[in-house]
Length: 200
Image (cartoon, rainbow, N blue to C red):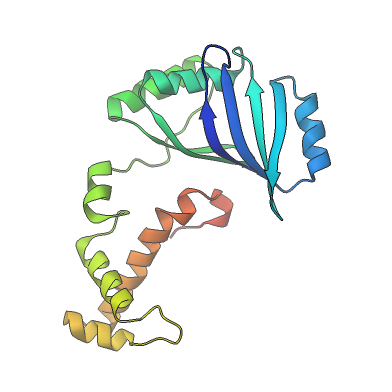
């Protein structure tokens, strides 16, 4: 079972509304589970694909998730992604600064919600280099794209890229591999469960 939050919001009339994709269970089983869940005030199946179902659920103000959402709002945190495979939640958020993050984590602990910060990324650096890439990684990835290295069939070789950058073929290989790792880890694997994306 795998859940991915697509949207989360709330207001005076609706304390918490979630829009989420569910995978790994039948529609009948999911409908039954949502109907039996005391934390769900209302749920509606919105659409489905071959491997996932999109739901909208409404939750009450006394639910812990509602309190966590309000805590995030109070510290100007923005939810970017949230996924779960049944063993807690993997959440990615944008926060103004470390003080806001610390305040949010402290408030979660006061609410009885365990929170562990796995990584912190500097948004200025991410914006400057793009997805966490260093200038040299961005350079070789851009060159590889322009020269058709990723085309099928391939239009240039790793040796040609290395020659253009005046570096060894091994250095080009390592730079390209690290750049791709950084790019995937900051895009695809930011929104996938940890069990599906393993870093090194």
